[in-house]
Length: 250
Length: 316
Image 1 (cartoon, rainbow over the protein chains, first blue to last red):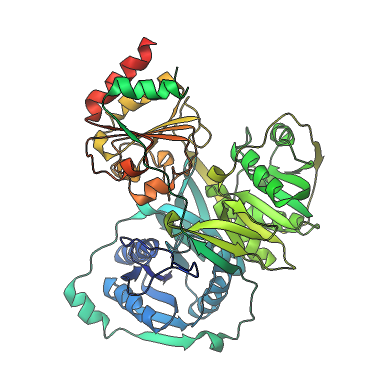
Image 2 (image 1 turned 90 degrees about the horizontal axis):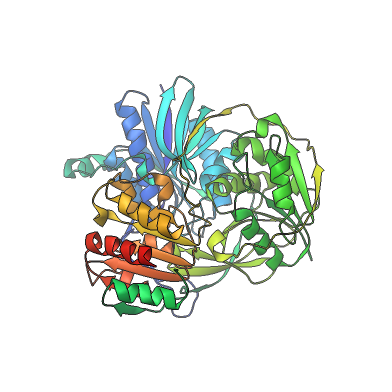
């Protein structure tokens, strides 16, 4: 029976507006509500549905970061993951390094499918899934809006700029999720209680013995350029007048 | 000075309009030479289009059967092999094509990727948006490694046309995997301009209320030669297909004129339009966030305003 590995990144909650620190040294995230990256939540939901349909038997959730990431893993366990692994890292882990760490976990766990969010809503990189697939020398199906399994293959419909593309990949494979793949379930209170007794293993990133990989240096943060608020027009005639004045319509 | 390789996106028939924008980004880096790689099958016509972009030194055609359809796992080893032929920078578009492919190439080359370049500070220093555009981060790529990056198309003007760069067929020595197969692409047939390159875009939101009501926007768009887009809410509600979504997780666009009709203006949507020339907002809620960024705002019922607007434009 298939085993699925899911990644859960701890990020500032989707509904919280994050601002740049006044000195431009980073983002002011202290004290903000933290959650599971929404795309990762969709990844876990897809894994749960595959298990509920009898197409998978075990789901392991993986996070990389500080002890506080246990909260997000407990959320994942409450949603229904069977086990969790926290790879403890004290400093920033960029996509290439994260892919290297996840590769080690994948070698150990031997999942048939790794499902990940297509991007994290903090750094918006959209890289880690593709990089893991590459280092693992396995196929990738990014931006998934539908996943169908058939024996040793997955048929994945992908949200691409031109429409909906379907590809077939041999397992094991990495699938990354887009918004319309599913709508994640709400967690019920008894599930939170149950999650407390589920296994959560931690290991230090140093134990993996990975070589350092090149990384990007963050030089500075700034707020985006703001658009000026424009003018209010009373009616359609005034709107068309303004557009003609600017030569935008004939 | 830099030797830049740009990977071109195409649909098997014609070059994607983003290619000329990625070339602009490459030229901003300060290119000693700028080559464009076209991976496809029988892609000579596409190569000629790429060669017409001003600033392109050579077009390298990787013509082979396996490239008939774009599969990142198949294209990445070829591009990685080509990039290692003395290039300092490898650039692709920040489209679903580039987002799928480029990290795979970066991982093969063992380097980090710079996603969504908005501006070039130096050959290794770039600005990119983070937190759905709520902040801009300046990053520096490590010295002594090739820079792999995607260019945020809306931040770059299309380089002009009229050149005639040399086209060279090229073969690279790369082992291609057989574990991925392309099956089909379902695309909404449309005669309208492409959303990502259109000068005028008319977008509708959830307030349209149904797929049928979108027909109002189609006729308005046709009067102006505009493309039609939609907010995520309208796509999620099933009014239109996903390829029409404008915003953080859809298409990021920069038309000269943008109509946001019945769109409240969630930050994720605003991220997708902030480089537009003039934004016109039509919404019945005077408190809608879209009015904070719109250049011309009209408060009212879209179901009476849109037909009236259509009539006013027909009159001329």
